[in-house]
Image (tube, rainbow, N blue to C red; front, side, top):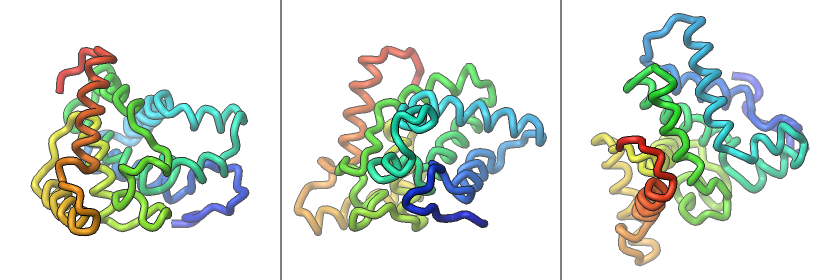
Length: 199
């Protein structure tokens, strides 16, 4: 896939490969015709865009794409891939936008900043956005928890291994690490927003 990297000064927010793999993850296993797939993908990313204010700031040229890529992870390939996975989980439940769009309001509670310590070891390694399969699972796990989605067996195993390794390295008990933080934020946010979406 061409255009897998961007120059530091590029005015583009996403690489072509990030968009490709994000849409591939979104539509994987979802039985839709070509035209309907395009329509659903456009609706999904528009809904994600609506709860990701930094993307709009770049589009409106209030801030530059390099600034957003520097300070946030949501425009990097890893995050776009994970957002596609979240969308895929929603589409497998229902292809009706009126049913899956409300769930995406929960993404507004995600702190995408690189400075967010929840990303350490999940999405970031040594301050750089990771690209490995394990990091895709760990980052998607975090988003699934924020969305109120259960983890499958493989996801739980990867999560458990991550938390155990983190405990050995930091001495912090697993239940106080990222996912418990995500659960608390998701629970409080659900109460505050009162969006009426069942978990």
